Image (cartoon, helix red, strand yellow):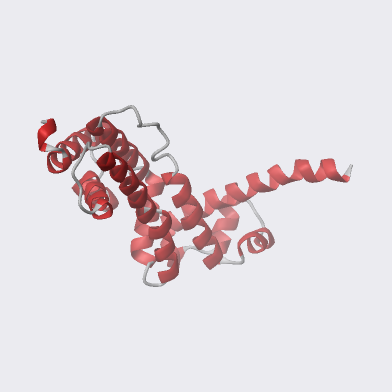
Length: 212
């Protein structure tokens, strides 16, 4: 009987934790770190202070948990599709589209803004964000570039640097404008244009001349 109760209560507790994080993220996005309070989170999540302090230890712990877990969740959809049978430009287009689709969501943009505004206050958190976000994506793409180079499909001297350059080109001005609150009227069309332009430019720089 005790075992059954424990098994049933565990998913319920995890679900409640996610609800609190959802509510807290909205509070931080709406009020910023300085304006956010545990009382606001309690009201939005319909939770008790004791529950929040037990789970997260306070405002700083709540903020850190949101940035770490939501960054991992937002970026988890990148590189999920098998690209082994695709040609290089098609694979690059797939990666670029997944990156933009993930990073142009309201939550992703909001977390990015929080890191920009609070990174100086939380340097370790900023480092964690870059480790589980940009650095991890760059390293994954670099490994893909190494594989293509070993198969004689591309010419690349520094795969990690080249991967970073590609990701920067993909995000481009559109992401910077979006962080500032200037979203394109037609996001899907804007993503398509960014992907096409980035891949066309990048492919000219890494393709083998004998494969033109």
